[in-house]
Image (cartoon, rainbow, N blue to C red):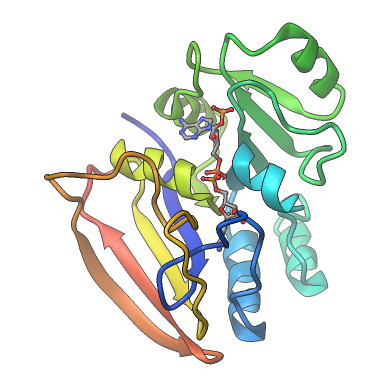
Length: 224
Ligand SMILES: NC(=O)c1ccc[n+]([C@@H]2O[C@H](COP(=O)([O-])OP(=O)(O)OC[C@H]3O[C@@H](n4cnc5c(N)ncnc54)[C@H](OP(=O)(O)O)[C@@H]3O)[C@@H](O)[C@H]2O)c1
């Protein structure tokens, strides 16, 4: 399959949680890591999240640094990359910060027509998959549009679907100096989990940032 290069970026506590049992956002990264995330965003063609993250955190997903936004414009690009939400049933609230020019809602063909009508005023909509967004089909469509590099910023369920379908090339994990706990708190990958045939990783880089550590992993999957 021809698809963009896809990488996940996530911040987790030292006990592997990406938020709390209430699925409330936690500030795990410090200043250095947030600046790194902003650079990764500005070097991507699109940033993608699942609708669970939109409902929990209401992220804007734009590039924050004025300097990086200007540099993109000087390269003939929009200030920030495209923003993509995997949202099979079009549950994104019309006031969500992610919506607006440059946003793509990826929905299933069975998404309620009235939701699509409402949200199409705030976003481009792409239908792929019958009852759930078909990520392979979506990536193939995005690749045809010239999108070559996608940064996935969670959450746990979308990360799992992507990894379990062999659609991820790299994973950046920032492990912050804190503990969250809770057996129901989301981790890097939720979903069904593997019982065997575990995807294996190669450690590409380790870096101390703020009071935590950044790990960069590559996956030995099929090349895009
Ligand atoms: N620390 C971090 O770096 C970080 C980053 C992001 C999020 N988070 C945290 O992660 C939590 C959200 O994670 P989450 O697992 O609840 O939500 P999520 O992964 O953001 O979104 C999951 C939703 O995406 C939709 N979706 C559409 N197509 C999908 C597909 N093919 N595979 C999987 N999902 C698909 C599904 O809803 P439909 O079936 O309705 O489409 C699914 O419920 C929040 O607590 C947030 O704070 C942490």
